[in-house]
Each structure stands twice: as C-alpha cells, then as structure tokens.
Image 1 (cartoon, rainbow, N blue to C red):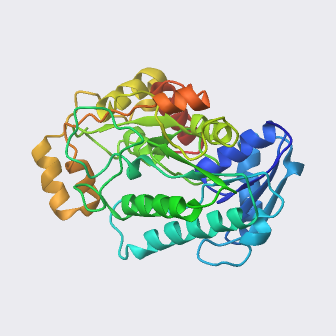
Image 2 (cartoon, one colour):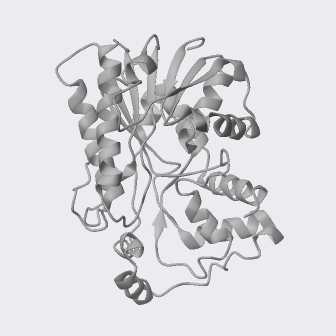
Image 3 (cartoon, rainbow, N blue to C red):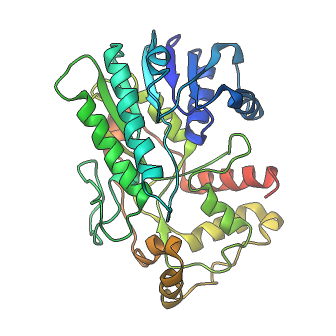
Length: 343
C-alpha cells in the first residue's frame, strides 16, 4: 500500500499523531481533522518535533464529532478512513454524556459519511475498555469475542463510551456491503509523546517516573507501544480478511505489575529515575481500598487488586502481521520522552 489519500480523524491526538507520521513516511497523502483549524499550527509543530517527513502531503480540515458539518467533505475522495478521534477521560466525570455522546455520535457521523461516500474500509480506534473491563476475574485470556458489561465492577464513563461507540459503528455498517469496518482494541498505550500533551497510559508512567505514586499498589496493566498501535491501524486498512473484525493489541499476553514498571525505569534510566520508588515500596491493598472510598478515580484500580489480566493477540499477529516491541521498550520510550519534555 502506497500513495493513497487517507483521512485520519483527531489529528492532534496521541495515536493519530503516530499514524500520521507513519503514513507520511510511507508516501501517502494525509487529510486530518481538527475541531478547529485554529489548532493546525500547534498540531503541525508537534508532528515536526516528532520527526515528520513529507509535510507537504499533510492537510487539515475542520470537523467536530458533535456537528454534522464538514464530514462529507472530509471523507470525499479518500481511499480509507482511520477514525481515531474520541474523548479520553478515564475516571470520574461530572456528566457522563460529556464523554459518551461525542464518542458514540462522532462514530456514527464518521462511519455513515464514509459509507455514503463509498469508502472501502474504515478502521475505528476502540479500546481494551470495550473488551476486558467490568468482568469478574477470568482464568483465561480475553479475546475479541468478549465485550465489557456497561455496569460491571470498575467500569466508568470512558469504558462505557468505548463499548457504546464501537457497537454504534458496527450498527452503522450492518446490512450493506459498500464499506467494511475494522475495530482496533489496544490495551494501555504508551510511548513517545507527540506535541506537548500527555495522553493514554503515559500518564501512569509519568506518575511512577516523578514519584507522584510513592508506593505501588498490587495493580497490573497490559501495555502496548503507540508506534505498534499505529502500524496495526495502517495494516488493517488493506489486510486480507481484516474487514469486519476486531483486533486486540498488546505487547504480551500478561499484564505488568506497576512495581515491575518502576524496576525497569530504575534499571534503564539510572540517575534520571531517582524519583522512581524502589520495587519493594508496596502499598497495602487495604490502603488502596480506603483511598478509593473517598477518591472515585481510585475505584477501577481497587476493583482489580491482585488481578493479572491476560490478553490474546493471536488474531492481530495472524491477520495484520502484528509484531509488537517488548513492553519494557515501550514504557522506557514513554519515560525518555517525558524527561525530554521536562517531567
């Protein structure tokens, strides 16, 4: 695949930024959406700092997830759509509709516009939140056949938004054969930041790196590098057999305890990791549960203490050629990037 014109929604985002970088480097023409073109120069500046090549092949258009205007023009004449834009608000929010409505309604707008324009394939960024949250502990690996219950333990507005948005995407392509949908389900995404913002699970790496988390709860996270997530999205645009499929993306099957993240950062960064707690600094489960009583943001963590989720990436490896780098490299790259930005 080369020389195609592709639409990437949410052009100032973390995953979208890495997708744009890889598409441009691969010789494609990229059209990216922003809520307002007032954000264009900041988006370009962040991409330049991240090593953007062939900037002349990148253009921006204005389109908002909550407004139907602009989407028909955005999808016009493109060979594929990567719908990455979605609100990212893990934890408690004052009004769940602030997260759920843009995610669900935006997905419907983008997928319908692509369908009406006859775009062959849409790749939608969903998340592991749509698969592996809200369940009682399982003794098997999660697969693409799993869906998160909307009101299970540990589910929040962000998790519900991912379930509802992805289901809306599948409904929007049902009963027609013009446009195929593919959904991507990455676990906790970390890696080099693009621009000044910190997104995804890179926030968690920052908390460990800066000592904001002074001791480790017995909590484990499955990680994946943003560069591998971007590459999988691009592969999904054309891979045989990918149409109509969901794909879990993770660096390895087993989730990683936070204490192991700290140990890797201390080993690899040396003196630059002097604020990282030693792996022996462990927070008792009772303290985490007590903190969650008064801090709703701690409740998803408290719900999974001692639980080591497993994630199967067999389908992505088989159909997309997914071959992710080790999680240790991903969290180190995130930390290096944060340090370079002054964390």
